[in-house]
Image 1 (cartoon, rainbow, N blue to C red):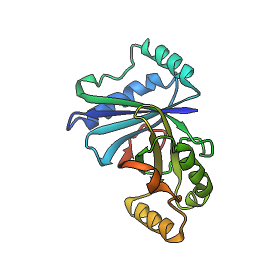
Image 2 (image 1 turned 90 degrees about the horizontal axis):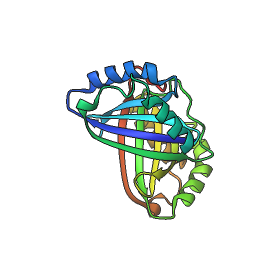
Image 3 (image 1 turned 90 degrees about the vertical axis):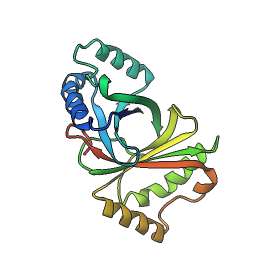
Image 4 (image 1 turned 45 degrees about the vertical axis):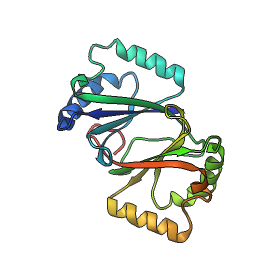
Length: 205
């Protein structure tokens, strides 16, 4: 399984119209493949939408995108609002549960780390040992390495019921020694995050 994370920076004040048009067009797109999630930024870079699509592999992605491009109702008519587009392919760690639709949020934190070259296997090993205990506090939605996109990227997404719960969980995890895994700072070059909210039509809420 792979996940494509597409991030669009859109014009200020356009979010409601962009989500409306995207949601209407998605009704036609989902017969080819369904969204994993659709979010917009609440904290972090302003005026961004983030949509996540799951595929079995790159060949399936290419086939589905080719088929969908022939549909007159896709892509959504939002080009006038888009200022920047980014796309990254993430290969999830094998021990992370597959993303399923449902209500696990509605607060989602997407964290993006740039790792020192060659350290992703060590990061994965540390995560595999510690993640079961960490997931007792709040669910991980996605975690894996960037295969295509920014080099040496590592993406993970966490779900919380509120920002207050996020703060409590993170504090509790540190106090209990549950999280983070050891050795993290030694492998990190940069870190960034954003807090996301789901759109009404997002399968992941």
